[in-house]
Length: 534
Image 1 (cartoon, rainbow, N blue to C red):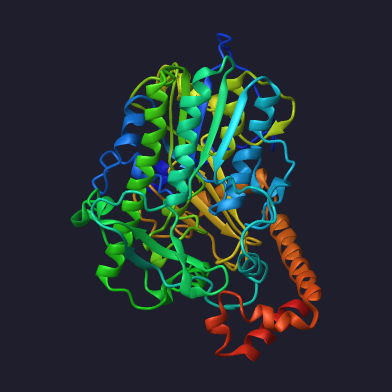
Image 2 (cartoon, helix red, strand yellow):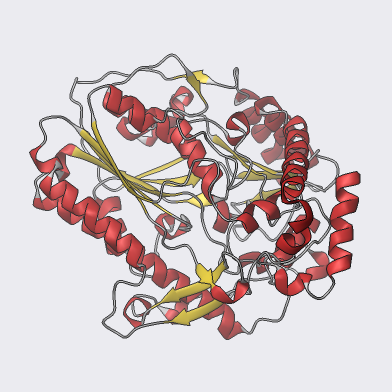
């Protein structure tokens, strides 16, 4: 009886949610003509669930709580790609990853790409950026790009260091991520010394590295980032006794793509409960330091009297698994990796607002343009969040579906996964499919009954699975996209190999996977050659 009641309503919802077009123009909405300031802080690898739980009993986040108490939190915000550069490319462009072909951390937007910040500057805003931006092609390490290109080589090598927790400093040491503090100081100083005296509206962007894990220097060239580093000062903000040990599916029962990710992330070995709990607690402590950086920006706005005339936004490029599903890092569609924070406070936004509509990073582009009063005819993937923020009640949102469709698309084409991954989040259901839709079994999770995503019900709810796949295919031809990524990876690697000439063997054997390569160099070299010839 439960199946009969639930399935038809979901299928009717999915059919009604089918998009009429793949892209939509930036819509204009009623405005009082005032152009407000905007400050956006984008962290790196912040688990959005820490901001959406009814009660966060893991770590103290007073500044994000202040934003929630004085603004709106989006309970279901998702990244459009769970990896740094492609997710940020989606945010800056307002386009899904497959439309800009932002395949990995090396292949994203062109340096001269016109972002929403460029557009608002052209329309009278003063703009300023500090810190991590990371959306332009050509960045990240050589190891990182070669790992992405060769992901089709079966179980090539472990690409990351084993995740570890590390403590530094003493009980008074606050500034652990020095680069983030320096950039935050610059942003706060700019607010106090420059923005405060402007006659024009401004938009300020601050990009943080936290709470992304730190480089592990024993990994070799350019290092892997598998160290969760904090100080006793921040660890005191964590309720260690409440830090849970996530449930793991046995290795032999894991989805094949999950197993590959666990393998390349160096997580197939034995971990004690204490190791896992430390990694998770130290990660939460890094989130507490991130919260303090947000507090510095809020304080600067408050001190200058700008807080009441400024929209303040906090988000992240993706989340962090922190040993859920026997993985750390991101590169996964599970909640820890794909669910991001999105909190906005500012003029006209009611306090203590909780918005359950599913949104994603591509929505930031039209939101920023609407705040700035900029109207363009170029079509984008996202929808402005302003109608949701200004809706008088949840009833208004549900009775006006045009405000924002209740689904999000995320896709991943980079390293640490041996297939392109596509996620469609619609209502309570999360559908995940891979590559050509046939090489690997799909996954379907009911987040209302299985928030830990441990029970794949794709076979049990076959009608919903097929409906979700139909909806996904109406948004993007993911089989064709996967083929394009395969071609790109092989061409890029072949070109890179040819450019090295006789030095190829020496270079590839000394990337950050060198510790594994040195044990069976001929085996790995042959595996790559077979892949290139296939």
